[in-house]
Image (cartoon, rainbow, N blue to C red; front, side):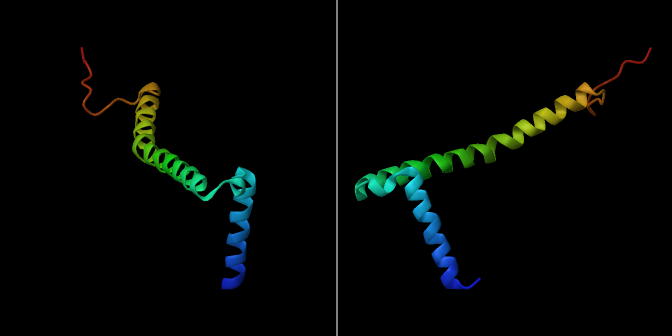
Length: 80
């Protein structure tokens, strides 16, 4: 794939995006607000996923370990 076809493909994707979102009908200042809002939302979702998803996976993993009978290392078992 050469550079010209890659450039044309990216331009085609951009045109598809504008058609789907109807942003081709907007004025330049409206586009700026629209794109800024969308990019801000995307960054916030990615940041939230980066921060909270590993924590939730760790808690779920610990829950299932406890559910299936594996004890934590700091748990003291009572021997009679």
